[in-house]
Length: 88
Image 1: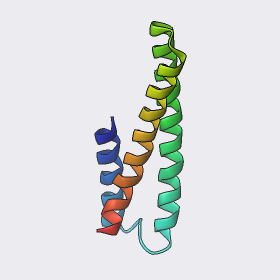
Image 2: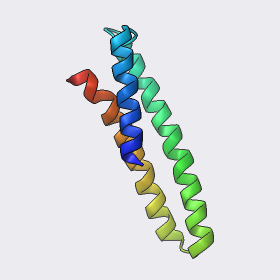
Image 3: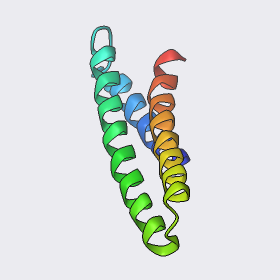
Image 4: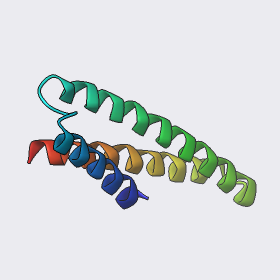
C-alpha cells in the first residue's frame, strides 16, 4: 500500500517538474494538494479497514490499531513520495 502510493505521488511530482507545472511558488501549492489527498486516502482506507476488521474479528482495539497504522503508512508514504523528487 505504501509503496504504491509513494510511487504514484513521486511520478506525479516528476511529471509536474518536467512540464514546468511545479516550480518556485507552485511547490507549496503542490505539497498542500498532496497532503490533502493523502489525508483523504488515509481516512477512507483506514475507515474501511476498521469496518472490515471489526465486523470479522469483533476486536475494537485491534481494528483501531491496524486501521490507524494503515492510514499513517499511506500519509507518510505519499508525503515522502511527493517531496523526494523536489528535494533531490
